[in-house]
Image 1: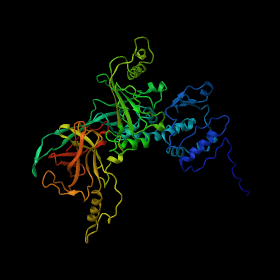
Image 2: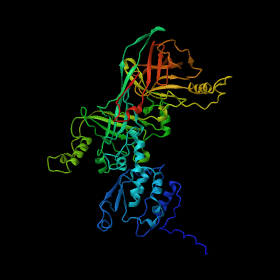
Image 3: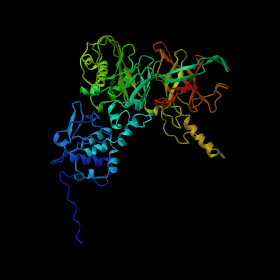
Image 4: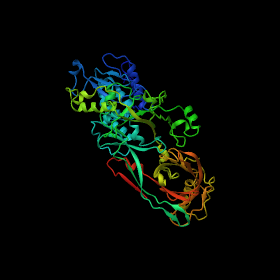
Length: 590
């Protein structure tokens, strides 16, 4: 029997593609070869970038359809078109698809649908859009709900996604709010607004298909001080509170079609301000969201070394963060002020910070109002006769901006507020600050270097059970290291971003005798030395004073301010409780 001749080497129009395709790299390589190969009678594949390095020039996730020419339109279904437009830069790039690939012309297209879906499942949203621009067959795979649902799911924690409604597909849903998905993804955002600051929670509401952000508030539901039996000169402030979102007054709100006005005018979606069109206008207040560009490491280190206000960087040095920006304190008399740099492409965009510019406008028609009227015009059928809403969308006199201010928001690394078996007090907490009311805090437990039983002076006792021995080993690793509370919202004395107390060592070196009797007779409770942060009004002459931290449970802590003869409480809050827009709205603690 004659030997089977080896297969011919692939020509320029027939790229070599591994049959097993073990990793997405094979897809990138095949696309790159086909994109560079001259091929008569068929279009080139658009180059695909690795998913972990989104190409900076890509800025749009929309795969729009242009009207086909007559010659091609006759050869295809009414539901398909011969051109797909992808805006891959501020100018836009048209990728022509005059013909579809024949399955036999590419080994990749000849692969089973399951294999194609498996390969495409390794790509980022921006790579999938590039794939969708190659041909109709790849487009049907690259835009499938199976591939786009995980992207929405990842960026909408807590939302119960049962369908992409009110959108037709999860791709349309994801593309509508790009690049704003980082807002609900990181969910917790705290600002530099004055000394008190703000804490907001951003979530996606699948019922209406919108992204919204609300102030997170807390109020005491019991306010009755009592004397401490062990020391009658000390006042104990029992603490029961109610945590809720201020649903009547959203801070952020993005809905279907709100941003089409900007996209149509070909603005740079990263550097231009984004209108925040709220359902209600409160006393002629308007807001714009501003995307940010992080500072370089050298600049951050220089500013962190300065005294308060730390060179106006946000977040402040007390909160570990991977990205910092300069606080932009815009005022009406800030002529000559140099604005912080803004991103111009996706690679420059920070997904850990943003700014919100707010102002009161008394005269003329603002840009956001014109966008709202433009949306009304579309609802009424576009450009109409004189007197309709469509004719109200036109340049108007510039209004007078009053009380203009820019707030800078930053998020938190989930690691900082996610408790672990050995760092159980990590989390977002709420504390009682007497006349100042309730304030939100980050309880941070920095990681400790690993330690052996010998280094922790642990020796197993004779006859000790396995359960008791393992508990002692775990306790030795729990009660170890530093515990610090950082204000996410502050007051007129100690502002947001500052420590409220610091316990240098919650282990044996810092442990002191627990006060006897109620209300501190919790099982497993422990008292440790700490320092409390106090200051005069305006954060003047701040200092740390002696205090004691009473670790009552993993969800409740008391702070004994020794010099002030006062004991206050802190309680853990569940942030995820508020992420489900259709769920309960009030969280009672205590």
